[in-house]
Figure 1 (cartoon, rainbow, N blue to C red):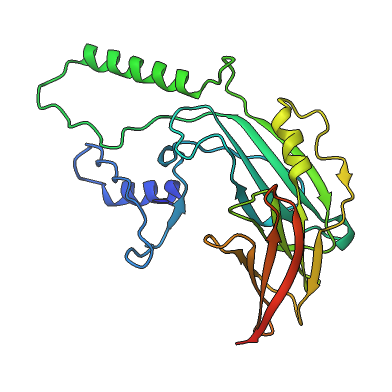
Figure 2: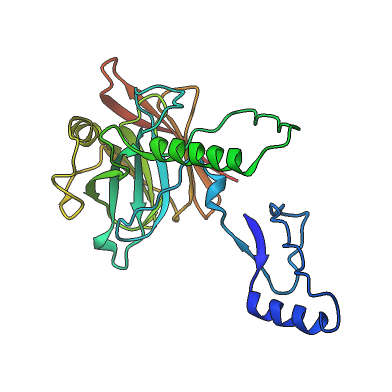
Length: 279
C-alpha cells in the first residue's frame, strides 16, 4: 500500500494560495512511500492506495457470491515455479443471501501471466546516460514486460474453470489437506464441519483446457462425514505433519480434535473424533 493525496484538487488550490508572490517554479512532487502499519500515521487528506506494480502477478475474477474463505490446493506441477504462465488450483466457499444458494467452488486458473523480477536489483551505473540510451532501455523493458505477460499461445488472457458443489449454509472456513489435497474440510454457519472428497472435480479440471461447463451448474454431492459443534466457528485446519488430523474450534470455546484414517490409495476409511475440549 502507498500513500497519496485524497483530494488532489484541494491540495493544488492550497498550494496556489500559498505560492502567490513567490517563484513560479513548480514544487517537486512528493515521493511515494510504502505504508508501514503501526509506524506511519495518515495525515489529513491522505488515503491508502494499492500499487499494482508491487505485485509480480495481479488478476481479479468475478465468481458470483462473495467468499469469506479460500485455500490453495496443492498440485504436482512443481514446488518452485518462476516462469510464467502459471496454473493454480484452489477451493472457496460462498456467503450467499440464502442458505440454500451456497456452494463450494473448485477452481483452476491457467495461463496466469506476470512479470519476472530479479531477486537482487542490479546496481545503478554511475556513468552518465544519454536520452537516446534511456529511450532504448525503456523500449527494451517494455517489450520484455509485454512478452512476459503473454501466454504460450501469444494471448495474455487467463482461463478460469469452475466446478460448484452445493453446501448447506454459508462457508465460514475451508481448508484442503496438505498431504491429500482432494480432501477438504468446511466450517458452516450452521455449526457443522463437513469433510469432502473433490478428487473427481479436480481430475476433470486437470483434463480440461477450457471451461465447458461453467459455474452455473451446481453439483449435489454428499459429504464424506459431517459432525456438529455447540455453535458455529471460524477456526479449522489440518495438521501439516500428521496426515488426517483435524482441529476445529467454535464460538462456544470448544475444540474438536479428529483423525482421518486414509488407505494407501488415498481413500477415506473413517473419521474418529477423539477429543472435545472446552477452552
